[in-house]
Image (cartoon, rainbow, N blue to C red):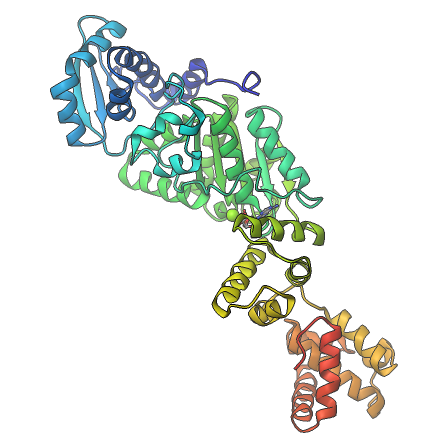
Length: 506
Ligand code: ADP
Ligand code: MG
């Protein structure tokens, strides 16, 4: 794969910078070259330093240093804190100066500065390779981020650019993603984009309801890139962060730095892009960010809770650009995939979920994978606390709330079919105006059940039964509730119906 993966090209970087340079940076601004130039020069200087000192020292002191200014006869190198700066002044100045002069010429002087906000440009490419065993999970390293524990970053092939607002979750990898008919396409597209970023699937636009794996796939893609592309610079963030950074940049008047940061990456991953709805200025800015990256052959990856055209007030030109590459939907996994996910998640926790319990959970929770996960957490917790083994019965007890609060449960149609069967009446009877007890009673029971186990309003329930108004439904619910209280036979009847609908009996 490494052969087919593009390596970061200096020309590309310059091209990105070039767009801004033409438009926004005054041409005589010799001390403010584009980040890409700085990164290139720094790569040369730092490889000189690396040759002159021991690898451990380099890792400790220079891994997070960066060239931040390049003048006619001077350079400034920034490190993360005063301690590091003083240390370098004291012990490594000579080496730094030698390396700078080797790269740029004898006349250059060196200034050491402090910059706690150091970005982490691509300079991992020449990092000395270490044994596999030495490679902690990329996530752990990424989470350390550039702000802490810099030494170990050398072990990561690539880097999340500083400003990625969240560390990646180590569990969100392609390996841990269960593929089924519902998500096969989105999964394949994410793998494809990770293998050939900037190529066929650009932009990659994943959409789907909450809890269906968008973030998981986005992060898997980041991990895969970090593993396979040395020096890749990924900016992964939520749309909210993009919005906040943009607003902050406007307020502080440093829009330049904002643009430099967002437009100098190989891969931009923005989660929950639907949050751009009603944010006109930010949409405008994102449009330019998107274009700059796209035109430079960089990869854009976006997720959203709805397809581009359904994001409220999204500018038409963004809608159309989002559709340039690949738009793909994540759907709710089917029953079999849900079972597989439950089994996988349990195993990840070092537990086995019995088949019938997995089946029960998959049957009952069918709208959101996060809820499925929550259910196993709760179930295992309950089992541990009570000292009882994980069985279907225990699941029913432990997950009572989950089961009854879930959406995806029985529908009014399910209720109608159970009730008509029980009483030997027809749907048209239930919907009719007839008030004989043989029809009215089943109708009231159906209304009661609809209110008890679906989320339909009184009015909606009335609508299903011949357009009756809410007071009729309320009357039915009150009457049946009272009957259940004083008449064991009715209670038994209702319990039986509830069980047939897959609900807990009374
Ligand atoms: P979204 O971003 O779409 O709201 P997430 O990516 O946060 O959803 O997914 C919610 C949870 O479900 C996560 O813990 C994720 O690991 C899990 N999940 C979703 N889809 C799958 C899948 N196909 N295989 C394994 N876990 C999944
Ligand atoms: Mg998400």
